[in-house]
Image 1: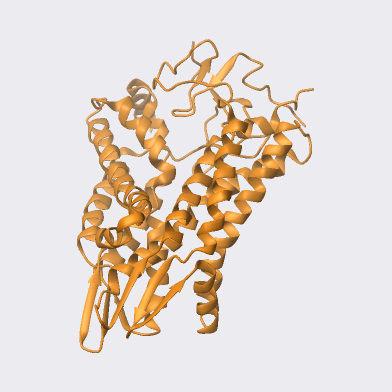
Image 2 (image 1 turned 45 degrees about the vertical axis):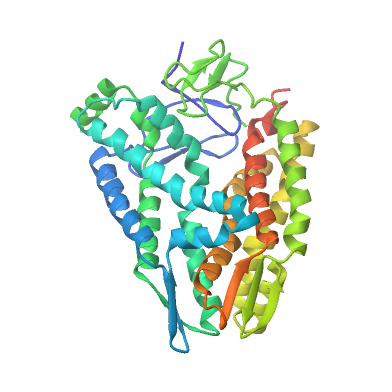
Length: 207
Length: 202
């Protein structure tokens, strides 16, 4: 037996009945004040547009240099993957792998899995491997650290600007845009995609 | 206070992955096939294990240098705190503060908060439940910002590659530091915040 009309707080195990929320309203737990759910249902068209934009920006952010430096006639530049490689020498391999996972692999997987689920949802179909994709989207979410990379780029620019001439490369701007897109995507309650397709259609018809 | 019933009393379990309310007899969520747990298994023991491992690694991550830079033949190995002090001396107190918060304040806060939550949950303490619950969510939120130093070291080492003029290499300290961040995140994830409220019904 399952009870889709109930919601259980993840943080304190309290049971509440779901109710319709007005625009931008947030349902909070009456016991521990944690967020239970939000009014912003996953708008598939909007979410897919954001995900595709994120995919394009992700490629630019990783293919182009994030920082360029110049000193006495010599210059150098580095992108995300080169930075991870620089970290991975010898004993640094473990931390290099952590950086590769959190800054590259996890954000890439998030974009690919979400895009996969949404393309099918838009055609009112359940994607092959839907449950697998949704489970992994949930599991890897805490390990996505694009916004930390952005802050790291800013700190590195300040750190190096004391002794060299430093400019932010196109990769830095792309990372900034990617951070904004990821934040916008995170505002949608992706979990509502779990609702049966029939229920979604009913909601759309009512609207 | 209007006390809502708790899922375990009603014979229900909330799915961690998809959020569905399931009858407690299910071993796996009927909707998403994730394993269901009334409480995370061995939550306190696992959290302590990750936390103690993180605390042990935290020592070398602060004592050992995280980066070695050589400029015009003059080499220098710097630790995390050394980096903070340098920023401070150079006049960029804001960046110094930022790195201090991300690399020192955040991990220390996580150690103290998680240890306090573990002890109080163990004793089924009724003290400040709401605040402890909020504290847990705060720790979850701030945890990954400690990766900042790892990112900075990676970028600087990738950029400063001018052979004789200057080079920068990562050192062992940053490896330990990266592991501390991962271990404290695992510790926070293995703690079950529902334990804070267990005993509330009595």
